[in-house]
Image (cartoon, rainbow, N blue to C red):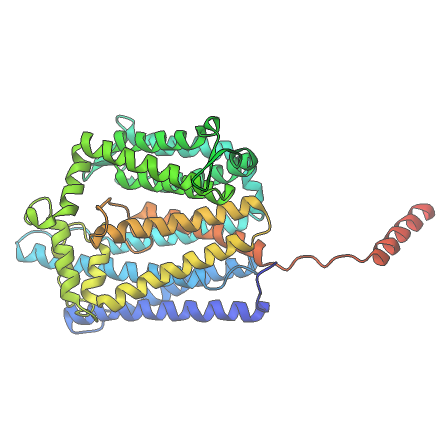
Length: 468
């Protein structure tokens, strides 16, 4: 059963209208920040709006040309999140410059222009993926190449002399003055491998050895893949001190395994391994213990270990329902507000309404991605679309849950909103792959050829051969 599709012209018009709306909102936000800080309209407002419009227009043209049946709502949601993210980073740049001037120091480097540069690169790769990858099923041919490349990228920061430790986590590599986080791209490559591997091994992994309490347990010899993924996530935790990436990779694999086999037992096994390893990590690793203790009681040390979480909670509490207004709060009092705690800045200046709007945008992207997975006609596309959608959902849950105190803070970025080039670029690649699968899923199936038409075609071909 295929998803209902809009006529081509209507679909293009819907996406274009929503992109114009997203660009307008981002431009208004840019102007609001400048007016709040200086009382006048910023001189770069028009240029910012035109620049964003040009980037999103290019992405729209690429989608309509190379993926005309793709979902028309995903790209506008991404555009609005990305535009808002640049506005928030600029707002925090201005706050940092004010604080430096009050302290008699030089203003730090502004990050908003860099974020806009990374957005440009991300849109360029978005277009390149749509142009180069015309059939997503061909990616399965390079599954093991993708796995090898992904593992190399994942472990590259642990290599002495190559990796860089920032804020206690060894996730980055330095390329001249630029720091990159290769695990963001590794995440996508490993999902391509997971999808291809699970499609080929699905029948074996679905076999049950015994039934216990209504659950079909897998055979012991089939536990190898999940144990290997578990061991790899533990290696990331040990070598790179990164709880967030470890949780993200293992969670993606377990969910894709469940989608492939439809066995609830795999989810329970994955949860059991995660719970056990979490307890061991809490007992053995100081940085994990510190984060859990801070989560349990951030006010036990409000000026030390709990300072970041406490300031973030105070900021969101200050924002209330409707927020203080863009440029009217003090989100810069939260350490690393541009990266880990960008949600606290949203909660303070846009209030609960702004936070819920952002979460609804993410929920809409994930929902459309899961709908793509349900309607895709091939198993590889189903698994890959499901994995891409769940990866985005899990990343949002992990960082939002950490900032709001629901779960221990892990330090991953909030897609398209947090400052960070690797995150912006890799998530544009993720969306391009999702739109490519969406185009295939929503494309009308070829009309069946009637027996009479088939016989007529065969007779015409035979006649042509005889005449020659």
